Length: 188
Image 1 (cartoon, one colour):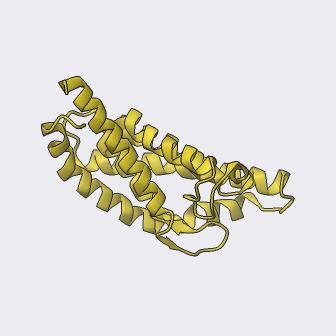
Image 2 (spheres, one colour):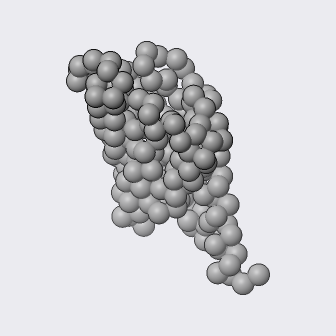
């Protein structure tokens, strides 16, 4: 196998691996009102950190596509009808969040822990902005469940901040150790 084909194969494997990890993260959850707390965001930001913006975003996009075709990888199942669930905005946000995280990380050749942590926060902000906005509009204008902006922000964003701080620190620590290994093996 020539080196270019081998590199493409490794990259496809990494994208598939992170798509699978995001799916597994959906089932590691803590129930909270309105939207469950899961480990998906941990794997989303880690994908962006380790794979970069394009491949990290691609891994979240693969996860999204797999769920939309009907494979039950989302927290409450799968299928095209999932777009009418209030939490669907988070799934769209996963693609954007991984991309944003990867874009920030890759601006530095050897990103510091603080750059990695900032990238995780920026990626999560993208996820939660899209998730909260989608939840608010779908709830109020499609489902007819009147939800105030404050309620949406509280239950779709603020309740997750403490856990996401911890997940972001762990992801940054892992990425700080893994990025040099991936670069050494030309996998990043």
